[in-house]
Image (cartoon, rainbow, N blue to C red):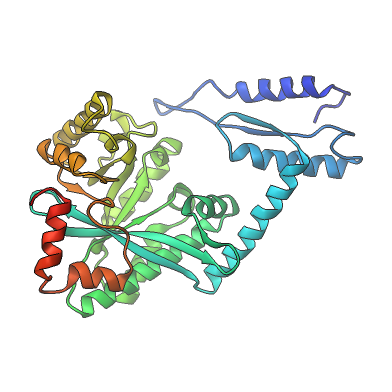
Length: 356
């Protein structure tokens, strides 16, 4: 709050200076942390004729800044109020969807490259609203994290996965399932407790669940993150580092708490067979994983050339549209879990992977 009158340009300059002040890293336990402030700005009387309105509009601008780049400054415009209204509407609808059990999961298969065998699936969350239709996961997960709903959604996912695992086990199918755990859930929730309770209720081993986290989670709060992951490991869960190479990981973090699996982000897989830069990064990740004894899964496989390049470099596992799209439980069972998979489907999978 600027106590003295200031022109809009001057106020913006001050806000940008405040954001820039956070650029210097904070050192903790020998590691560097980089805060990312978001600043919203509203000016009296242009953006409101009283203190309450101006502060409300500054808050609206701050939400806009949070959805932008790091160290972002946003200046209030009337259009922001409309976007915030839409955001709040979606938040209320998402809250009802969670309470009324109207979310659903699909499962994307993961395959072992040396023999094309199914080795597990990744559970992916979907939400179809009655008025808005299918909401992109990136959109509603952002809303969930901002509102705190992500903790309830995380519990819902674990419960739904455990029930599905129980149903598959009852039919003779043993399928490890990977679930994505957000940074907020890992650091501020209690995923180990939730998984322990839900696996006990479903009478399934926790070893069938793999927890996927993004590498930035460990950077934000390495001590708390390591503690949470240690509890998950003690429970029997495996830990995977998702989107590897896109965040701020360093050897210090990986060696302090090596994951069971590293997933090469699809950004590096996209043209790994044609772009020397991405090939070099993928090779480095594969070499690092081999030295640590960590399994590597490549994400986003869409072309045979990508798959053959990764197979020739020793990548153990892969997932992507070339091999299989996310499937409903019924379709997954029909295509990949049936005791005697039809020869035609087996041949189709082999052709997609470049083996035939």
